[in-house]
Image (cartoon, rainbow, N blue to C red; front, side, top):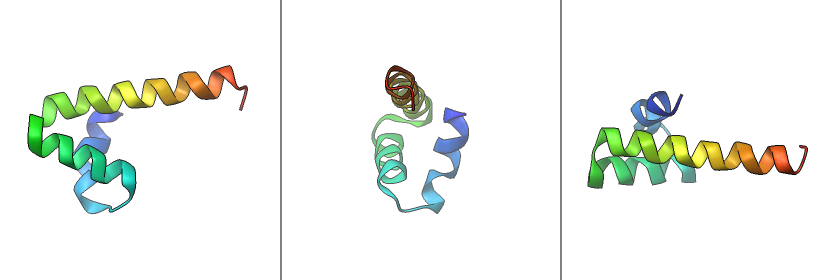
Length: 52
C-alpha cells in the first residue's frame, strides 16, 4: 500500500502527498516507501487505541 501511495503522490497536492514527494526526492523511492509504511502503521495504531 505504501509503495502505491509513493508512486501516485506526485498527482496530488495534499499535505501527506507533499510530504512523501519531498522524501522521495531527498532519499529515493525505497526509503520513501518505508517512511510511508511507518507513518501508516503509526496512524493505524492510534486509530486502534482510540477504538475509532
